[in-house]
Image (cartoon, rainbow, N blue to C red; front, side):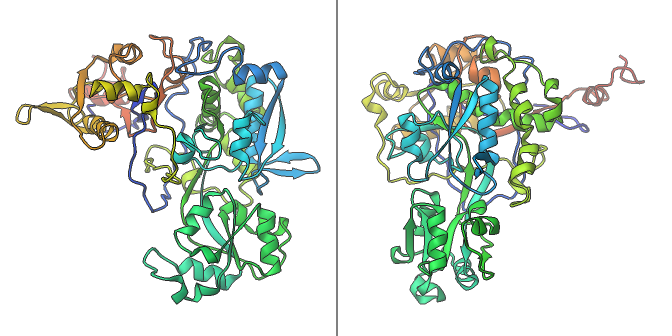
Length: 519
């Protein structure tokens, strides 16, 4: 897009989209990004999302027996939680914390009460899949493994946008923590360091297990069923340190779990990134959409300066159907915006900073989700004849929707092929599906006005062209009446004005009255 000087551009997240979603891998980064990152998708333009959301998409089970219908019929949202300081604490029968507030927001949005169901890190996936609860809001990291195929549940799950960017670290006896903090990827043998006698407790089923296995030998790792057991082992001398998220190992968490010794330290380094998100069963796209846009609504409200006391200032939307046109207003009225939720629950333990602050469009936003256990054997999509990947495989090529645009999709007369940023994503998908070849692609140059019809009608398998992720396109796009699956943003664009001086600057300042801008 053409640009002119002055003014602040609106940040618009652009993505690849497909129905059903195709998986596009990326190289995981080892460094924790400290840039502020919370930002609602430029999507909660609630005034434009005025299409009925009664129809589901894909192979959704969001029919009369869908999760939303069952929750509304019962009048209760069952929400799975795990006790963690600042996130889910049971105080005399009343649950408080960020995780529990998110449950309350969803319940308020769909007009029901909430019932909290306590689970564990090792049981949460099977509990959710079996229907023990409708939503998991329990200090859970979004990984590729859990998204695609979580082994114990035998299925994948859908996730909200991350509501807290956490990371695994160590805590415990100061000398043990200092030693563990000193270990690096270049450490050849722990036995040759002062950490040879360290015993580290970690909860079974937690992402911390995989993280510490990359650093310590098996005989140094003690798996325990829950956080209380980890601290009990620390008190009893069976472990010299524990591993977990920042809230799990914070001093208040240690005290809550009975560890009252003065000699307690928390590590300075984060082993892995842990973007925490709400989770739902992946067979109900309508319910997944509500979970995803709950977090977006809380962040968007903070961006707009709307608080719990001014929730009525939010616009209505019928994206989820007229019955839920007040969905976002009720969410904010129940718990407040993201900043209010954070201040009430997490701020006393982990002061808000870095990735958990509002992004103003001036800091980094690209963030690779952790991949999890890559050795897990999931279902083969080629075994499902009607899956998009099976159809592509039988056809022998991917049909990729693009729009010719400088640097993004251009045809090279010299090489007689398409080149550019969007084209490279098409090539990456081809390589993933056909085990290496990047040229099994037919490029379809399509207009913006009919791009969603092309993908809905199966003329293309995926769109890889400048396309903004919005609420109505996600839930029910106006031209097709269908919702679409989006990847995480691969480019953050913005709208600017350009033109003949001084008119470009006039437009950028929205000035049509001053001298020189009137014409």
